Image (cartoon, helix red, strand yellow):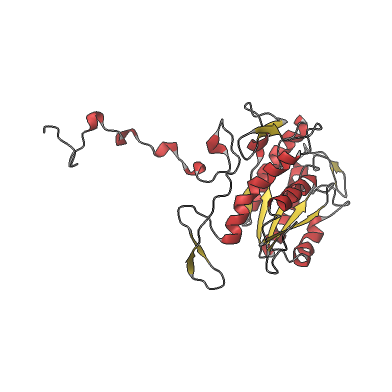
Length: 286
């Protein structure tokens, strides 16, 4: 039986296309027993930023945020956007520079509305797809999402490496959150299995908790209580490890590993014969 959510539970609003719909379903399952978090699904599976005649996120997003009293917004779209843009003058193909310019403008319009909401927001990147043409376009889209999101003060979550094989190509299977190889994608190479949906949600789990509990660093477990503006201590329970590739750990969304800069490791730190002047354990002759 599902636990009753608290009246002051934080409200996470998920917006976007059919991939966002999969994310919302998985987040609901993930937080089903967490009485402090409510997941609100408000997705349009066939929507995107190209067919604004079908649905305009720009015209609706601010009202959706206000109506749902969102504390955090998660947005994910683009899988339906590998198609021409029809302007008042002509039809633009995805390969034309004008198409990219219009698409960037539409991303920016959404990001500005998210920024102006005053809420924390996350733009989640699209995964790789079996269709190679769609995959190439989505790579470009993800770069645009990332650059514009970070410029407008949002958080970008990259999920690409969680759904590729050792050669960097599309894979139907991959590691789940426990390191076990499972089927992640359905036969169409587009949608997700139940395990694939869980993996999508796992990429968001840590960032959502960081935002909700103001714990952005494992090195410093202090967080700011916005109601009292006092520093208080909070014990963090490690519930699960975000997914990572066993072949290339430092490229995954693990935060800590990405801080390692190999160029900072200098050979001069490693001393020949173990002797160093002015150290207590230096017994070498002058």
